[in-house]
Length: 546
Image 1 (cartoon, helix red, strand yellow):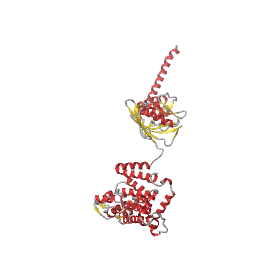
Image 2: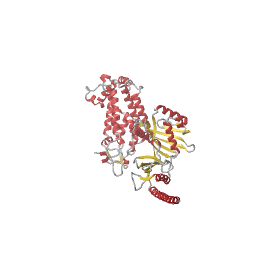
Image 3: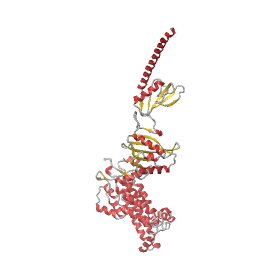
Image 4: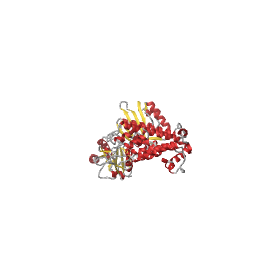
């Protein structure tokens, strides 16, 4: 009996003890959990949520027991408003090894160290920059991820089903867009057939803009990234159907054009600003084809590398400006005088364009800056290299300058009160002496063509002309000189309008038209009679840089 009476008392005492232990454990668990959650912070720059307590075992870590870990995980998700599954990294006290465990799963260890709370990791290694706390991936991102998944599995029909019937897909490697699902499907199968099955697209970055999704990707083969296979794409979502309605791919170019692309863009910009520049551009393209490459013009083209042509070029160069034939006729090569006269007239005409040297001047730079090369254009004149190159390749150099020349310099562009100075080349272009010399060389060349080497080519102009025409219709070099003269005649007045404008525009329209129309001599006459440069509306002397 006594034993029976003692049992209730013992059971009551044990129950009270267990109840007290449970209550103390519950209060302590709630206190520590609330304290940990209250010290929660979010670091958007690192892209993860971390927990702090005083007992730090490792960076962003603290020790909790199994019940508190589960409760803490639920409270964290509720506190942050996280709907997506949460990954919890913890370390077992017995092994001190860090592992990843889903917070929805039961905890295996009795003691854990909670170190970091990460957002859901995007598939394929992608980093989603747009997802903030409490936000799930939008429909657009899910559709795009499915599209890349089906693509990599070569399930093209399912990939196309993610798009609307009237979709538009543009790949910048192709000239036009693929419109409609059938066109897109044919394009995807064509690309897939051209690539090995081991090639797979991997998302690197994903930007979720609701109905607009941007991704950055690269291509891998058997887990290794391939060179020159990066790219970016933009997709748009049709909100009504929930499908993608457009795509735009920009693959990485295999050939890095670099400065060449900038040159093309610069050329397009100049053509848009001044549509008339399309005229010298078209003339330049035709000139290069007709003179150097075509089989229409007489004689072998430049690609044939005819030895006779190169010998002719050498002999004409030795008779440059008729210096050697005049001073040492016994030592100079003997060529047809009309060919020699044509060649040297062409060079004299090209040299006359040095009178427009100020056309390549850069405005708004101090004298010291131009001397030291610290200004925008340095001490180099933009037109000077072209003038020198015209002595070798004539219109093949002059026409590009007409297309590429930048803003026309005017004295009014210089800062008020500072004046302006010219480089030595620019000052020489303003002088009246060079054009006088070049005109003399041109007239001497014409006289040489009609009178020189009479003992070889006869004194009769008709006989001399017939022999020259025969050369003209069979020799590519001689024919190209004639084409050059025609081009110079057409474009010799191209710089006159801007030049006279920077000088005050006092030459009448009729006189300016005559200067443009009369070949060679008209250009020389303009350079000899044009007014000097203006500064502030008044004619002034030009100072030369020393």
